[in-house]
Length: 276
Length: 296
Image (cartoon, rainbow over all chains, first blue to last red; front, side, top):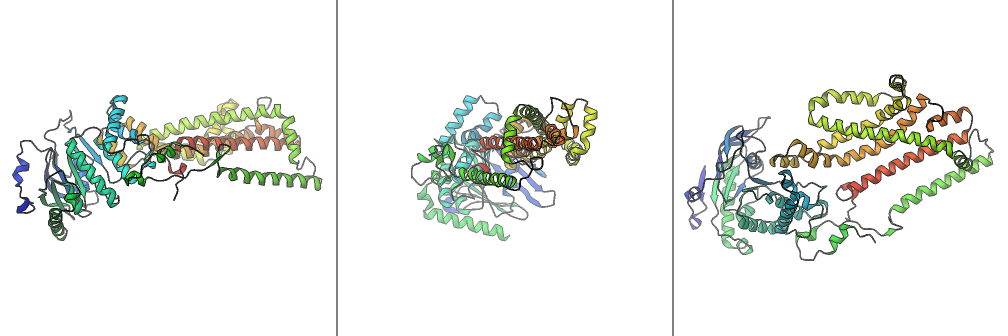
């Protein structure tokens, strides 16, 4: 596995991430996934997802990045290997009590429920008293910029707004880790930029670990502290890169030569991964 | 002008280029006498056709001097309806009571079975074929058996109408329960939702539009079942429904009365259809594609 800083100008040694005093949140060890039809979706992946990181899984379609993300969430189990949550409580049967939020590629909202009811859903399922659940959902909606749309139904919202509701729902339990599966792929560029900015701000403020699946080099560089480049057939990790540009990042960063340079470097890595 | 919650929302959005600007715009319509303007032609056009057809019918009957025991004119039918109202309305009530009891039983049994079937594949595999057999067997053919076995005539009518009515609700609800968004099912799984929570908060609401489509069909079928069963059962006396009145009037060549009873059955069927459509509209209007008109 190729593990390195992007170049000397943005040098950060891998050891900084590993020894910042805390155990990683998720340890992925020798994980492979073979589907029933024989397809090897993921082959021998080893990754640590550190606390507070913003990690992008970048790769072409079919590289198993979504499959990997879903396995971290507990949707589907690895064929071989382990995914451990060393800092998380485990229940009586030894299953980790994963403290996570998940955002799908589609907003995946319940069409019969208002924005507020959608965001409240995780709290309702955990038997949080209704009044408290409502207050927390209202607060969360305001945080994603949807104050005043509590009673709107998904049908009445734009694509970007529906995605915001979906993010609010994922964050309403204040999870330690937010898993996102190409959440903005279907949105137009202007909306995507705005949601990228708002997501970074939320991450900065709420201090969760973010794992973001994307096939866009530009999006991954703009958002991430760390980019894991994956290759397809079989899905595997090709490179693990640090993006050593400071936060907060904004439009200034997006138009900077540093950003362009980083994008070029990551693009090259991605091309290598695709060509391999 | 209407002022739905949708309009109120669209009014207060500032023009600031956010994604709130990109929200879909829904068609709003002027209202005439409380109904949307586009609904009126749907009411008036068939009404005009109906009046013209009745006029032609009355004209033909008078012009060709057709005797009333062959074809009564609509005016005579109307007069009969009023004159025989006491007998006919009592019978109508009996038929409607069987219809609604059968429909209620169809809803309870249909939805319960659908929920059980989606909980256990084995149960579905074992029992669904028998539900299909019940559905495809002509009710007229098994009604005599049911009458013998059930003993009580009202109970047998109820069973017949129920058999005809329950299948659309069962099969539509099964389809609905199985068509909840796969990612939402995953999400519920992620949050450790129990079976009951998944059923209550996800599967049942997802099945609602399908159930309502089934209800619309079953409403009419329950009435047909109630009438057909009575034709076969042939009850007598004062406690008999409209089907018996039609048979009785037919034997006595009181053809205007046959027509009056037929009209009552048709109007009941239309009323049941309108009622189920209205229930469906009220329950789905805020969220389902079928109930919202979008401006392109």
